[in-house]
Length: 611
Image (cartoon, rainbow, N blue to C red; front, top):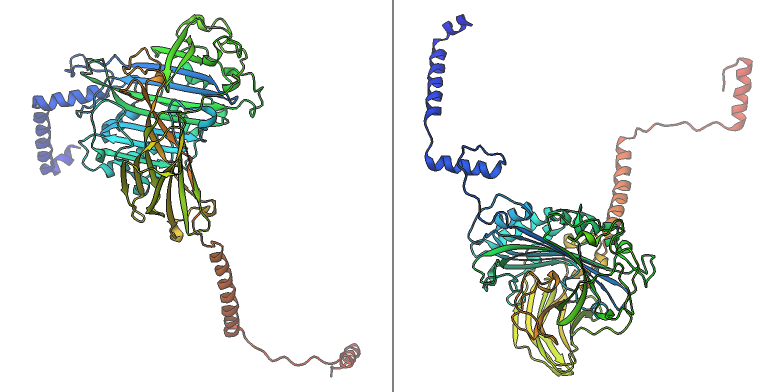
């Protein structure tokens, strides 16, 4: 080794210079700002921090996160059972000023990073399987259209809203294991009046709002699993134990949603918090599931029982709607609860029997609180004041009509409704044929906003404000022409048809009971989602059925026929030519007759040469 260094003095000199430089550089202290920034970053990423290291002071509201869970069970007049889960996580973090948060407790980190990364102010996403039958089941607590729905309010600091929207849909597609990556400019609209922020803030610039639906999205277990992982206790404890996919997806209606919005921390609203509300609604038909239709329990609906509340939940309650069973003549709760609660829900005062799961006496020793049988109420259901439906009329594959019918069942009050329609570009609307009629007379809208479509770029957007007369049906009709798509734009099953998203109808419906406009922590979660500033009305959002429209479809079997015919012609023609060019021909003598062959055989036997 010494001889090697003696033979290479230049390398020894360079090695010594580099060593001295490294030693001197390591002893030079870094600037205070740089060192403090590195220490803060390490403190936010590593849990065990050196006590001698200077760490940025924690946020004063770090340990004030809260989590609530509720389950509402309502026996419906149709014989079905409506179950609504509400999970609410409040995180006292404010992203409106560009604050970066690295520590997460109850709030899921995956969603927190998405909100911070894409400067999201409000996010509302739902996945629904089935259609809510308003005339049979009444109004749901939180409505949602069939398929997937996504609408987002961005911060005013976002410069490229369309680019951020596209990236956000791709990220959410991975988080919820859904097909949200198919959301693009062809099915995204920018409403001007139909969707207002549900949280605090006076955001009125609709340039930062995006709305899109996927009416053909199929909801399955792969969507429910990541949804349950967002809960603080997952599906290990609390009400989420009942969320068994085998039972949920055998229901008549299933919808799961995630809503994120800023809310006030107190009555003065000097500071805001971030609310994550996860909802799951299901309607069970116990007759089709093989159970007795007049008897039901939690175990029959979910095949599971409750054993404990979520340890991280500050409130865990189950509400049983007993409004139609005030005297106990229709069904009986066992074990009975002495705690009753009244709440104004959708303009009607309802009475609930409350079971507090945080109280250990609720569970008893071995039985769950709902192991006994109940019966569903019998009687006439009060019709919803607002109802809507939509269908396609016409014949042939060239033109057609879209009919939207809105019903006002109030006997003497009229109220305005805001209608939003998003129609794909391949249905070319004739906006001059738009008609609105009520009771056989023309009903002129007081506000119309129409944005025409562009082929393969954006859909039609139609918004209008219509006054619905009392006890009437208002019909909105518009004609359209079907476009001929390129053969690469058809779906794998084009003869099934193309889906058109549901119409959205929003309104403040008159209420028979005064509504409490101040939202407090004591109110049930299912009665305090939509903000309302009027005591004599409540907000209702109704979705119509999605449309299934047939388009002019070419015969996709013709390419197969053409390929087969072409290959046959080529095989016959080319094969014959190739055979003629490559075959070698030889002259063959005619075969001798029978007598000559017999003679040759005799001559061979005699040893004589053949003829």
